[in-house]
Amino acid sequence: MSVEPLDLLHDLLQGRDSDRLRTFLGRFHPSDLADLLEELDEDDRRRVVRALAADPALAAEALAEMEWEEHPEDSLAALRPDQLAAVVAELSDDDAADLLGEMEPDERNRVLAALPSREAGELRELLQYDEESAGGIMTTELVAVAEFLSAAEAIDEVRRQAEEVGEFYTVFVIDGERRLRGTLSLQALVTAQPGARVQDLVEPAIATVSPDMDQEDVGRILSRYNLASVAVVDATDRLLGRVTFDDVIDVLEAENTEDLLRFGGVSEAEEIRGGWGDAVRSRLPWLFVNLITAFAAASVVLLFEGTVAALPLLAAWMPVVAGMGGNAGTQALAVTVRRLALSQERSGRRWGVVGKELLVGLTNGLAIGSSVAIIAWVANGSPALGGVVMIAMWMNLGVAGFAGAFVPITLEKIGADPAVASSIFVTTFTDLIGFLLLLGLATWVLLPQL
Image 1 (tube, helix red, strand yellow):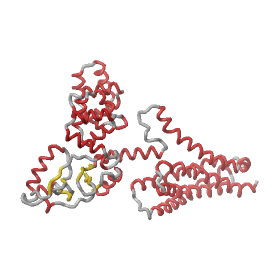
Image 2 (cartoon, rainbow, N blue to C red):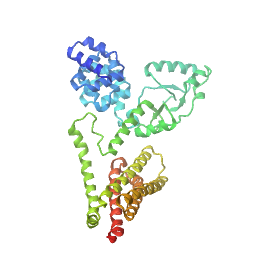
Image 3 (cartoon, rainbow, N blue to C red):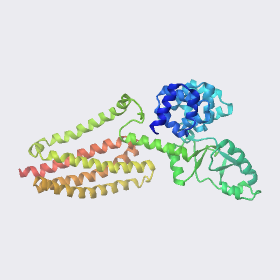
Image 4 (tube, helix red, strand yellow):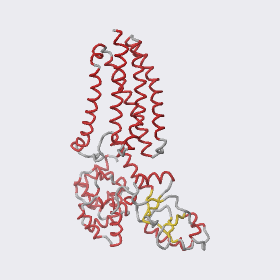
């Protein structure tokens, strides 16, 4: 978003000309308008939302495009319950449920009371599901036709429902008790003979999901089968709603961001625009954990205090060996955690990943270790030192590859989150082993030569 529109918006807010402000806001695509709203402080944002109340559809689309960490529901405090209900009514039911779910119970109930009873009932039902489940991201707005209809009757029914649903990608086929019988492509429907029965045209559903399925698993199903939408059904196969690919894209983006933050030891509760105090509270606990592990690595160095004092050149090579081990471990860890997140490996084959990463680490360690050995030999004039550094580097990179795969797989096996805890264990392990190998070999090989 360029600076100019934001400056113009600030000028209009200072001028307090509501008509000009509404005209200005109406020029923007909802996504661009959402970007503008995110740049404003809370007071100005509420004034803009108040101006948008005259166009509930635009207000609804802009709020739906805002990032959830910006708390768009807070901006709605500027609206009366009837205005808020008008905005909510313009949202798709899944977005409306998400918005209402972020509100205080009293405010949520006031909004629901201002909505038509049918729409309020549907939203209350959606609000019962966990927000990270298929039920929490599904929409009940879909196109479904009865299996006993003819093709001509089904086309008329699709036209009627499409006026209320908006965009849809799949026609679901149901029986008299709303149990899912399969899906019907629009191409098959419009090219069929008018008198053909839907039950003869229907195709079995490639996949269905239960309302309590985790949203990440829903995303994997849509991705695996290349589906535009997937039906959500209960235990009796009764059609409850659908999850569309655009909802899953948002989910996977949020989940990837969450995993990335946790991988770096940052709480997912830390917001992008949060204050420095929130950032400190989020990060400090993990830094203390890392401090404890750093002391563990330092204790290994203390064990070889005499060796380091006698061979001060080792101090220059210690961070090289430990740092390369940490980098190699992080590479193996990132690949393994990604495999686990995408469920790319069956449980029986996951231990093969450990062997692969061990082999990769040993191979890379041999190449890097040989290069470092030559540098150590030339720089320090000691072939023995070069050999010690090479062996330490080779073995530490092998250990790093092993740990980078073994640790997350083991953590997942015992029910822990590998994205949160793995990096601490892996870096600690490579530091400990790296120092132990370098200083231990130096004590055994180099110290007797003095």
